[in-house]
Amino acid sequence: MRRKLALAFVLSASVLAGCATTSPSVDDLSITGAVKPVHVEPPTAAALFIGDAAANMDDQARNDYLAAQMSALDGQGKTAFESEASGVHGSVESARSALTALHPDMECRRYSSVVWVLGNGRLVEGDACRDKGGPWQAMGIRHEG
Image 1 (tube, helix red, strand yellow):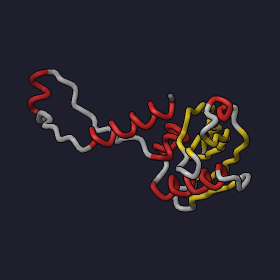
Image 2: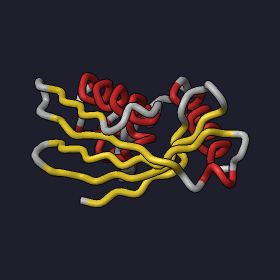
Image 3: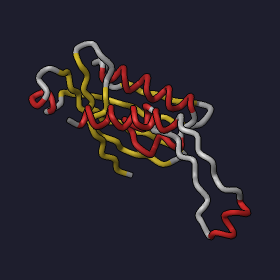
Image 4: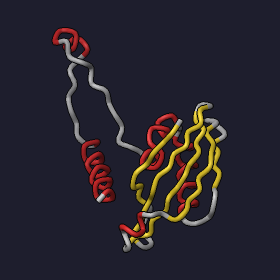
């Protein structure tokens, strides 16, 4: 169920990202008292696995993190990553997940990521599942720090 909801969210965000809207000018906002709209990007793949920690990472750091995430989920053990340009670093490891019992047609793994962004460490834990041979899908995350 979570997988379907996550997929629906990503698809709807993709569709909505392509919609064009007309925003009022700054002068119009001062007259009406309206709040200036803020453009919000759809979540990146990294954000689906580590939440808002991804917002403070540049593209290279997010790609480095995702490579480590996929490697750990594919059973390569604890995998470290580092983006020298932005100073983002950390590690990801995975283990068996209890979700496998709930989704016997899928392969599920529990993961734990330690991510250091802007000098602040964050522990992010979650589960990821995939259809046999398919891409990993985040099934929920919990973070501390």
